[in-house]
Image (cartoon, rainbow, N blue to C red; front, top):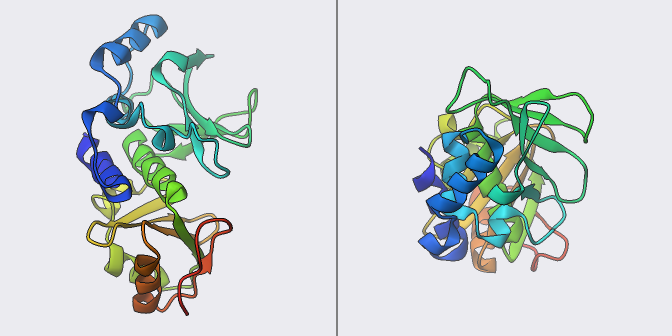
Length: 228
């Protein structure tokens, strides 16, 4: 379902994708047997592509990254399959095994254990595409942020392009972008109207700033600022 898009994100960020980055079918099936449920197709795809990749799983513990639960650490609590959480805060995300929209169920979030679940994203596949891009951006050596004004999101769209398509990654709080030739990725938050751009080389970040006209601010501890 989303395997190729996830592979594209990883190839852009890390130079290549290999099967060794993902969990085996046996490992995923073992988690399903332990839980007594079948995992949604999109979650199975994420594990198959990126389940053993530290940055994509959020195992590095960087601030503002998300912590994907490895298959062997998945839990079902009160009927909710909890598969993701914040690395430095208690927020969590889940799907419900009885969701009528399976195999691509709605994602629900909560601010911490024991809190009430609320609707977060209309599809798990879109949520995971955005998780993948966000994790990749946060792991890149050169990063910058910018609060976008009206009309500036279209500038990002024209220069980078969506991961797959806008439809593939819409339905929640984020949108995801990439440009393979320059190995540049970006994650946009509707909540803060902020885009975070990441690149593997400083010249790529500087080129994006020049072409976009955006006033990027270098992310703390993530390489030099783009040239003005």
